[in-house]
Amino acid sequence: MNRVRLGGSDVEVSEICLGTMTYGNQTPQPQAHAQMDRAVEIGMTFFDCAEMYPVNPVKTETFGISEQVIGEWLAKNSRRDQVEIATKITGPTQLIRDGAPFDGKTVLECIDKSLTRLQSDYIDLYQLHWPVRGSYAFRQNWTYNPSQQSRQATLDHMADVLEALAQARKAGKIRAAGLSNESAWGLTRWCDVADRLGAPRIAAIQNEYSLLYRQYDTDLAETAVNEDVTLLAYSPLAAGLLTGKYADGNIPAQSRVAVDKAAGGMGNLGGRKTNRAEAAVAAYVDLARKHGWDPVHMSIAWQLTRPFKVVPIIGATDFDQLQHMVAGFGKPLPEDLAKAIARLHREHPLPY
Image 1 (cartoon, one colour):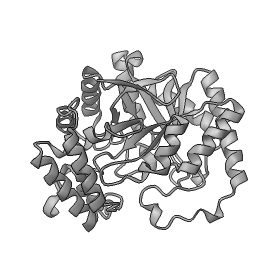
Image 2: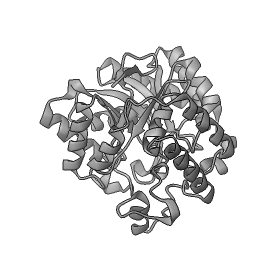
Image 3: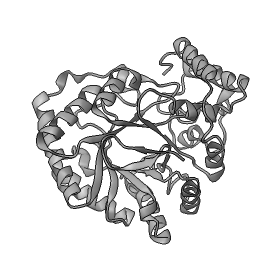
Image 4: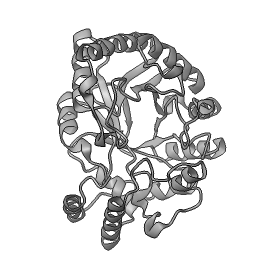
């Protein structure tokens, strides 16, 4: 598998990343370890996690379990030097730290806790999961209101956190810093403040990006290109929609929709499962099949054609799903198919 560098850092990773947000919940530890074994076998050495994982659902009592699952694998295999580990500090949530936003002191404490769970001396990429000032991610764009934000308070917070990250990097606990669910303005200011302080410059931004969700394509893409920041694209299959498995109202057993409904949720994949999204999915699935492509393979391969640095994060609840995705790795997207995708995007912009 090809290797890419995260932004301007010295962290080199595989061009596709393995997400671990179901590890310890939908994906039991033996299955998770089998996935990581297979990933390393094919050269996919980059693993992404977070202190709040596993999800579906997120619960206070399960915080940190996904990191623990990775830690057990690292300890069992003595492979720390063969992989790159990314994890995140959670933003404000009532499920942890009594809902308080993180500051520099909290960042240092949480890095140490993640290191303990991961059974590692260092984290390759440490990310800030949510901006403490708020975010338009996860369908919050429909009601997003930044009017109550304080510019100076935000800049002061950034300086405090970046000084902590600089301390952690100097101690060898992290190699690079990243963001998640951030905006173009936020990314720019994090870079500016880092430059002023001589703190770790932002190497990556982990935002949602798929054939169905392309808000990154304009202002964020321009910012990232000019600031040399790599996109880590989560939900490249739109939480499973782009597999086509939910077509015609189908809800496969153990799917995210089924699990969410069983837990009393809405089963709408975080607002992604809409009538317009279903129409867009049908169009993309039909396009893939007309060109002799599996829609999963097309969705992932398309990401690697984008005119900016991007590493898609794939996730699988079971080993067979991972094998299905792996089967399409390394297959270049033909130019005629890329052009057809561009045409479909104009017909189905922002379907959720």
